[in-house]
Length: 398
Image 1: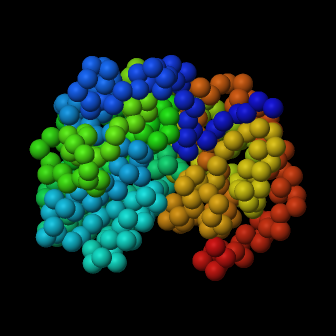
Image 2: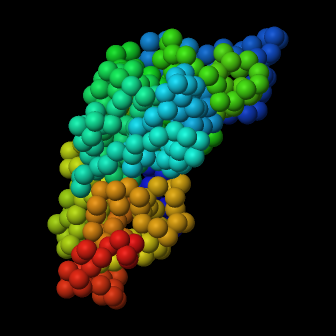
C-alpha cells in the first residue's frame, strides 16, 4: 500500500539531495572536525559551509550566530536557561498556553524553582491579545518565549511586534521557530528576537539535528559544558552528517520559499472540499494567519482517533495534535486553550503538507474521508441534539 503522508508538522521525509550530501560523512569523511590533521580539517571546512547555509536561511548577520544542537527541544531548553542566566535578578517569564511541551514543561519546572510564569491566553481563532502581553510585562520580566507558529493549528503570531513590545521592558526574546523554518522567510538582521530555534526534521533534514540562532553580543551561557565545540556554546563532538544534512536542507529551503504557494493551493483545496462536502466541519485557527501547509479541521460528534485509525487503513497519515503528546488520552492543550466546544475538541484532525505532497494524494484523501466520517457518525453516541446538552459541561467531560 502506498503511504500518503500528511503529517509533516511532526516530521518530514529526508530530501534525497540531503541524503546524498550526508553520505560521504557517514562512510569516507569521518574525521573529527576539531582535529589538527587535514583529514579532520576537511570535515571542519564542510561544517563551516553548513553553518553558512543555515545562517542564510535565518537571514543572520553572521554565520557565527548559529549554534548546532540535537533538536528543537534542546534548542528551546538552552535558550530559556541562557536568557535567565543573562539576567539573574529578574524572576518573571512570559509564554503562552499553546506552546510546545518542551517550553511549557521547562516553565513549569522553573515555577517550582521560584520563577513566576505568565501563560498568555489565545482567542477562539488561536490568536494572542497583545494588550494582555503588555499588561503582563514588568521590570522583573527576564524572558518572553513565544512560538512563531503553532504546531497544531499553524496559526502565526506577530513575533516582531511581540519582540518590540518586550524590548521596551528590557526582556530577552526567544522564539521557537521549529514549524516556520522553510515555510516563511526569516530575517534576523532586522529582527527584534535575541534567540530562535529550528529543527532539521521539520525541513527535510534528518532527525537528531537542529540549530539555535543567538544574536551577536548576547550574553550567552551554555546548557552543555565540556569541550570547546561550537565556540564553547554547545559542548560535544558535532553530529557531522546531520549538520551537513541540515545545511543542505537549509540551502534547498531558502530556494523553495518562493514556491510555498503550491503547498497553500493544495492545502486550501483539501480544506475547502472537506468543508463543502462533509457537514458539521470547521477549521480550527485563524483563516488567514496560518502556515501555508497546515490545516486543523474539527469533525463534530466523532472522535479524532477513530478518524485517524480509519485513514491509516487506507495508508493515509495525519494526526490529532503534536507528535510529542500522541499517546495521551487528554484532548489537545492547544485546542482547549482556544475554548473549542467538546463536540469539536475531540474530533479534530491536523493535515500538514510538504513540497512532496501531490494533487493525486489530496484527491485520494478527499475520496475516502467523507465515507469514513459518515460511517463513524452513524455509530457515534453523540448527535446534534445531544451537543446542546453538552454545552457548559465540557470541563467535566474532557
